[in-house]
Length: 301
Ligand code: GRG
Image (cartoon, rainbow, N blue to C red; front, side, top):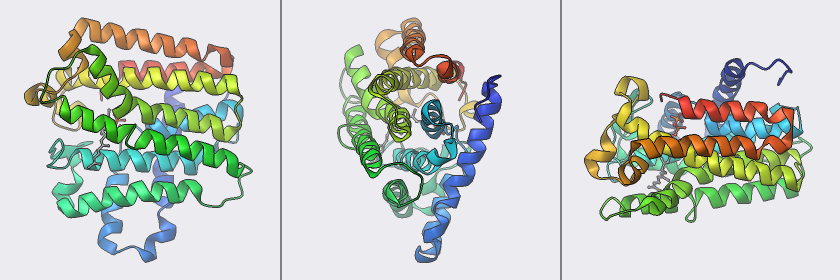
C-alpha cells in the first residue's frame, strides 16, 4: 500500500475510505443485540465524516514495521470509536453545548441528550470490545494488552478525560502557557500519541522505534491542538463544520489567548519540525509521517 513513489493525499484518501467502511462494519456483529435506536444513533456519529487522523496515524506507524496494514484496521477503528465518543460528549449541553459537528447536527440535537450520553458510553466500551476481540492476525496477546493499556491511559482520567476537566476548570480562572500545554497534552495529545504508539506496539516495533513514535505523537498532538485553537479564531463554520469563535466567547484557556497568535503559530511550527526530526531515525519509510504532520499544520478544519 505504501509505495515508493508515495502520494500523501492519495494515501490519506484511501486510508480514510478503509477506516470509514470499517467503523460501521465492526459494529455489525452486535447489531441484532443492540436496540435499534441506539444502533442508528451510533451509526449516525460514526458516519458523520471527520479526518480520521488518529486511525490513519495508527495504521501508518504500523505500516512502517509491518506492511500488512489491514491487520491494524480493527485497532484503528477502536481508537476512532473513542475519539467519536469524546466528540459526542464534548458537544453536550453540560460541556461545550454545540449544535453542529462536522457540518451536521450534533448527536444530542438529533437523538436527545440521554441517548447522546449513552451513544458515547457505548462507543467507548465497544472500542475495547473491538480492540481485544480474538482474531487470527498473528499479533501476540502481550502486544495487544500493552497497546490496549496505552490506549486506556490516554483516554482515561490521566489523559483525555483529565484534560477535559482541566479545560473546564481553567475556563473560570487564569491560565499561563504551561497550564495550557498541560491541558492540551492531556485533552488532545495523549490520544494522538497513543494512536501512533499502538500502531508501533502492535507491529512489533523495537524500543528505538517506539521511542520515536512516542515523541512524534506527543509533539504532533500538542501542535494539533494549538492549530485547533488558532482555527477557532481564524476559520469559519463552513470550513470547520461547527461554530467557531467559541473559545474566546466563553473565556477558554487557549494557546493564542495566553501567548498571542504569533507565538502560537511559531510554537506549532516548531513542534511539527521537532516531530519530523524525531522520526528520522526510522529512515526513509517515515517520510510520510512527516508529511501527515505538515498536513496537520496547514489544515483548515
Ligand atoms: C466524559 C462527559 C464526558 C466528556 C468527556 C473526553 C471529552 C469529553 C472530551 C475530550 C476533549 C476533546 C473533544 C478533545 C479533542 C480535541 C479536538 C482537537 C477534537 C477535534 O479532532 P479532529 O479535528 O476532529 O480530529 P475530526 O472531526 O476530524 O474527527
